[in-house]
Length: 427
Image (cartoon, rainbow, N blue to C red; front, side, top):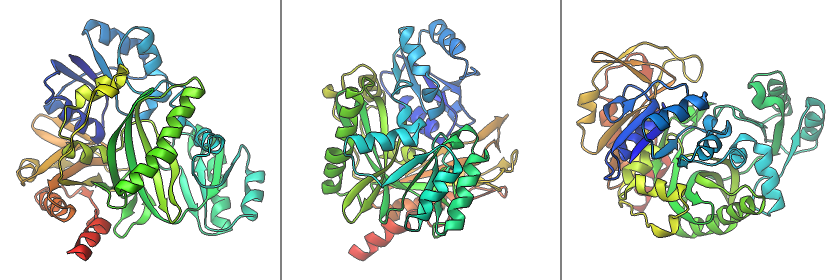
């Protein structure tokens, strides 16, 4: 099969790494790709927002399947245009992608179909939102309704902080994403990421992971797109996974079908595991970043076959196998992130880092110039390791980090701390 992968981040490098080893893959292209992806796929400069250009490339290169990594092309309706042209695609339609495009849409769906989630209200102007906050318990959560690259969620511990967050949304701090807001109850518990493949009817579990959103050690500082992740997630026991499937995933898939917008693709449920059980925080309509990096390290089945089955309504014909090992990834980011990152700095020592047992390095924001790798984004590298335990995977990942010579970047030193502490307590 000829495959076109859309995207340029660490998730896409992890996908490309797995797809390139599939016996079904004849030729793998990636648009636009990055410095690391170029080692396992042919990177092509297609303006992804130009759907006609994508369609021309697919026809000119006899593409059998398009795999869309990030959310923006999904929300823009690329799947719809590819389907109209008769090209198979992994990902939801524009209508189904509303699950991520609008937090309010998802909250309303949860309310209608009795899917457990935080209490909330939606607002299109600041004054009623502030009036609502004045009547609620603190802390409280303010969310920009639309896509905000993971930065549109603010936990306010005082009324003043909440009002400031409201003003930030409606003053344009998050662009169009903040033209409406969701204000919701603050949930106590432990966060987890849960992934499934959905072909419109059938659902196959992809597993659970936990990521670290805060930029600093000890889960401090501003939220980011993710500074690291590990899998499996200890909090997601078999009982908790079963409840998540029964109470959240299955009702959502049924609800989307009932609304005439059947869901097809990867569905990523951001969960809070509370004393009452799992509650839905939000949905993403694609694979996670950096969660996908650890999931592919544990997957022991052909990924391309699974994505093709998802795109063709045949998930009931496959079974995924997983390694018993744990996996952990450490994000190395450019200095300045999550603010404006320092670009263009050279990264050395990658070959030495990759030589650590069990380690793969996925590039998230690099540019290759000759034999040199330069930082070309905020999150730049995913140092990913597999081990018999989270502690072993963590040790391997940080051993690899220690071999990288990059004064222009940084990382957290405590990725996986919660899981490692649990392992030590059981020892």
